[in-house]
Image (cartoon, rainbow, N blue to C red; front, side):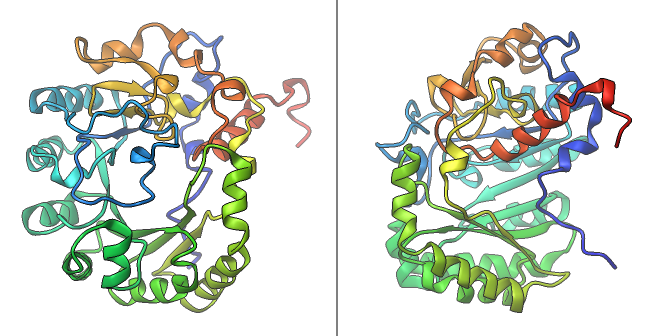
Length: 358
């Protein structure tokens, strides 16, 4: 059987109506396909590389760690997403979504109608007990950020007690034994400290039941050249470790997605509007709607607020808000959607008089 990939840049092409509704001259406003919701900005860890808390990065510049979405507002948002036909929600940070005080109620509310697929990006510390049971049974996927190879390195990276390493590994093993309905992934941020351990980490994750591993580089600066200089000293070693892991460990039950690359091409943009802000926007814990996870909690990524209005009304009124951000000018920083945007824009800009000459 041909392998089916969890990670792909081409998923959006399974939603052609959405793609063709994107340009400014189109009058129809369709709902997002996928929403990122950041339910709380509080976190139970202190990762040294966290972009939302780094003073020198634009991401998270205006974040208030006390913000969280009120329970009633969260239920209202879910009701709107269900009614609009949004396909999926990913709960992420900001903070740690599984310590959001209303997370159990939120999951149960989504499960009640089964109209939305949902997923979590989490550090995994609270992935246990009833939360774990519900996600394993009804969730689509969960991805655990884990950048270390033992308790000592985990404690150093995240400024937490060493015992948390054992707890997270136990949570992963327990979760992987519950069900295969919900895909279990891990996410490694490569830095100078863990680069020589990438193969060992991938091997461990596979052994404890993880289905996929995504690997990316740490962002240390909004300046592409500075970022590349940081990675240049160990980039080749990282690639060697990743290729070894893919060659030896990858199979139909364990996928490795290598998105680790020099960042220069992901910083500078050559297009003037962003398709993906209409496809996968972010609702922050401050009840602001942002263009993406790379401009969340930054006025430069702000599309508007839903504090005093419903999300459905905000989304369906004033299409001009989707074009207020000019990536060529405003987004010269890391962008997770850059390659997808380039593909969509190439597709939409084809000269139609010659379309049949395939």
